[in-house]
Length: 264
Ligand SMILES: Nc1ncnc2c1ncn2[C@@H]1O[C@H](COP(=O)(O)OP(=O)(O)OP(=O)(O)O)[C@@H](O)[C@H]1O
Ligand SMILES: [Mg+2]
Image (tube, rainbow, N blue to C red):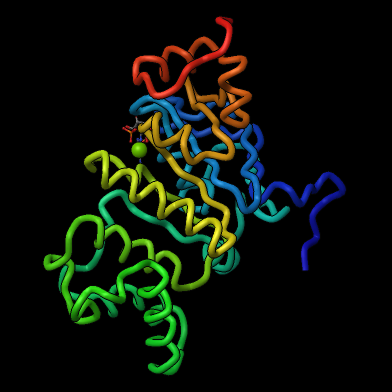
């Protein structure tokens, strides 16, 4: 099915090389190299305004770069036409920061939305898929949950409904933009657990943008730090802790979330 070149490595689901993006005179991405590991939880950290959301939008073809390569399963998606990019986008699910549910649709309608938009599936199959997700995400035991509207749910439930909607078309890759921002510590921990469990249960590749260092070092398989338009550090949490880049150390240390090895 794939026609990747000889350098293609199955370990990496997404490989970004030399990605540049400017808005007017503002150079946001200045040569990003990034590898996203298949089936793992990959976390991108970095200060506000550094370009994390812009980078994430490039990964699923929502933004086009000025130059560079973005290979998804070995296929360079830069410059693909609309039909081809649409196919690539079906590999992705996106979990938005504030769930971004439709207020006028109930839980079932919200979760089913991508399926109804994309395919003509029988109603019974749609309902089966939605109910399966409600069960897997511990929502099935909430009384009357299927008919509830977003305004009648708690914040944590809304997040799970948002996740169910991102999962309903069985994506291979889930993108989360700051999933724990604005949540209390307990709710944040629950979201962390949800991200880990989703990765394990569904075998998806996760890409998470995070501000939350405690959470990052708890759940990441790999971490990449974006600074001044490039990725200045990447590796497993243990690798980064053992030999931290000075900027990474500056960024992470104030949170008190982790202890670094010998100073660099
Ligand atoms: N569509 C756009 N047009 C013009 N400028 C943009 C656009 N999208 C993003 N930017 C600019 O690019 C820079 C990076 O924005 P981005 O949203 O990626 O930051 P971020 O790292 O996600 O920050 P935060 O942690 O606050 O969400 C910002 O200066 C922003 O103003
Ligand atoms: Mg952002």
